[in-house]
Image (cartoon, rainbow, N blue to C red; front, side, top):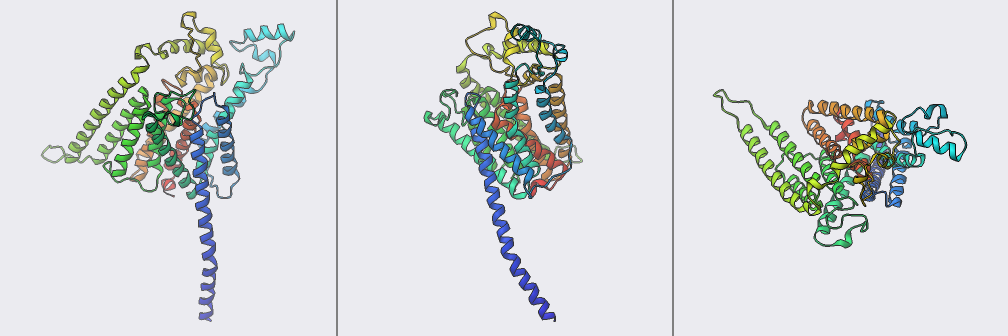
Length: 465
């Protein structure tokens, strides 16, 4: 009887082995599908509004990611948390802005006087209208966030193979961006995917805006290291140094002044964090330990190198004109005036140009069409009003709390959380002088990083799945 039982066990094991192999093979295939999907979204997501086909494709792929995340039996959902609430709030704000209201309500909102006059002249009476002054523009902006939500949900509910595949997609997109940027700067202009709209004198990778190329490679490099399986043991590892050199060259090739400043800040933060992890208590004799000396020396070398690179890249980028002549300095006070025109409800997402032109002084009008405020905080306040302000504040507070919680962890969790937090801070800092998060590729990467930071701090083993 005992022999019969052992034979049955062997038979069951023999039957389970092909099933296990089949499941592993299916998991690898699914992981590569996610790699392909995310790589495609990132690469084609570098286009601006002048290329609607690319944005539509991003929306379709983002919707596909959302559908799979919501319906797949492999999705693993955690309890609804604060980060999920903030993401849901973003969707809710768009919905609120496009709900029609009776004339008695929308006429009470500031900045709608001209619309009321037009309604009376054209229709003879006031019409039902939403908060936004342009429903079509706001609806198109709402479609823009589909990839953001899709990738956020895909990572949030992802199992090991899915997340591994998505990290692989970040690596592939990063390699393409760096290679394209360097080859473009070397003179291969044929490699610019958007030759009409892009800054062809710079190495802007698969972006139409060279500033966004710099932000992307910094974000992608930090995330690729943070979310990978094998975390580097030391900052001096060959793969870390090689990645740092490649990304730094790509940032310099982009000719982005803000990108170079961000690169210097990221290098300084990484050096300071590494030094802090190596600190040793002072000896009884009052001398500093070797960790202090090594960390201080590394930080000094990093800062000197970063500043030197910044000076060189700034001179290179100055070919566009002196910094003091940058139009951003004129646009900021005008954007503040535009906020007051529609406060506290905002004019509606995607409608920035209308309130901006209403308050733009004649002497500030140029041939260049102002599409954005080059300050995403101000533009969000113009379009979203007080609700946008509350969401931004909630997101910043949440990121800060998660980063602090992650830093209090030990081992790899601490390092991974710090790197993901750095990846999130890069586009947020750049948003003060530009609009990187309005580019689909960067917004998608931001969504993934936000989900990863939340997952890492709530479950220390999630990133190592």
